Image (cartoon, rainbow over the protein chains, first blue to last red):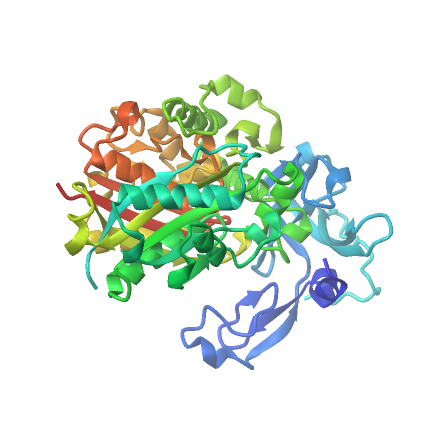
Length: 151
Length: 389
């Protein structure tokens, strides 16, 4: 993948920066410039504002992948899930720091910053979000810059 | 808009066709369909070609004029257009050909579909076919096309109690049908136990829940119904040709266990053809994965949401059933050359409706339905075909 193509998504992939429609209140991830929910959606242009997702959510479905996506071969078998975030949007990501066989629908998780894959031995390294089981103690994994706006 | 008929068909064997090039398989089916339609090359108006990934697979984009030239028709400088929509490319090409003839702009067109998936290593083909899913927000995070369908399967099992055995029956049925199809990639019969014990791909889907990677091509000749009888004694009417789209990513769907693109395309197709699911005797549906066939049966309206597992297991969709599904062997056993699939589905329906399907024949078939999906449901194309005699 070209450097530019991955680099320009870092605010979304690293920090879960989404958007919110100020007309109907729907939250989106990835961010949108027009709101599909608003009946006159073109009027939502310039009415969408940046919205930081908390990263907290719940597994709504999962699979254990044995035939890997490109770049994920060394991680096999890995759990991939659909995670419904607290704010509404559903994301696709790996569930980590837990045995794949222990992942279940309903598992509460939180997004965390991880390495996704690398382009060969000397290529670009891609980072993004994965999900870990939510600690009951409420302690947070360290975010990229040390700053994390909770909503 | 005038009525459109299928006048001729052609299809190669599906499988690993290492000794045959893309051009060769395109030529074979194009000429077969033209001969079957008794259509002189002088009367041909154009070519529509369904193909998903020729650039990535054989480094060749812009393939429609290439095939037109290969079939020896270039000196008339006909229009040739490639159509792409993931796995639905062939069915989308058919939709475009239908619109071209219905509009009156062209009288006769060839619609072909072709793909060469086995010229590259399996991992490369798997990566290329995953390009029908959302690259930026699904694949980059570790998703493959089977993994995404597996997410749908897991939720379907959770919400409706669908079992792995019920999924497995879809594959067993496909191979039972494929065993009677000389063009099928796989002609061996398989058992539920073999499907359950096959190596895992993305749980709960295993190797035998997933259609193979195949090479192959298929083609049809379309023309106006008013001129059809000069070309064939058995013109098959296209009673409906409808397309509907949905979000690219599975995670953006309204319900992850429902293919809204199929629900809407089917509704539009039944409206256009003035038919209901109960009137369809034979259906070629998208069984790329066992779960995709079950969900498609629900969303096409053949069974209620969530009931596909037990209904399929009852034999309703097998030989002697109310609607025979995938008599060709489907994507699972006949094979899955992505761009050819949608056209091959219609080739099988035409043979069935003409009464030419030999030991695969569904007795008395007069109304058929074909459904093809792109990606995990971002596109669905539904065609309804009818016998006219």
